[in-house]
Image (cartoon, rainbow, N blue to C red; front, top):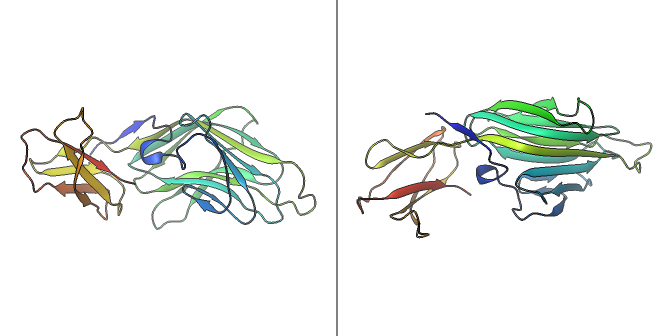
Length: 226
């Protein structure tokens, strides 16, 4: 089944947490964002969904940092432009981790500071991927005002295709394995009266749902997930 890549801009299956624009300080784990130890990372979604800015102090007695991590909703390519400012110890990296495998890392800050760079990375549905700002460690001058800043724009990621009807009663689509999808139906796309008719999940990325209710002659379906 073919998949598509779309400018999802941190929406849909790649939505930001929280969704409202603003500047958030993250300590510990919060949705798709995570910080370790005592580092207080900053996530700026003021210009979301077009732009995401992550910032973390580049000094710490213990090396740690800030992560933004999500899961690929389909097979394809994650593409984005990023601008980095990386000073002091530490680094800014891209991370990908297939299910059951060790993560791989690619530096994003190897180019000129403050100059946008373009990246393309292949992913498979269900892969964890995201951005890591490693604070490094600076035991001698932990108070130095160094920062790591990552600005991500033009974010493009693979999204599942439109639901297909394998038969008059069987829906099929590609999604994330072991994720529970809620199946809803309506007879009028212009309305808001979507009705839940069941759930579906699969240990693989090919997912199907059998509709037991014949109902109206014209019916529309959608599959949603948290």
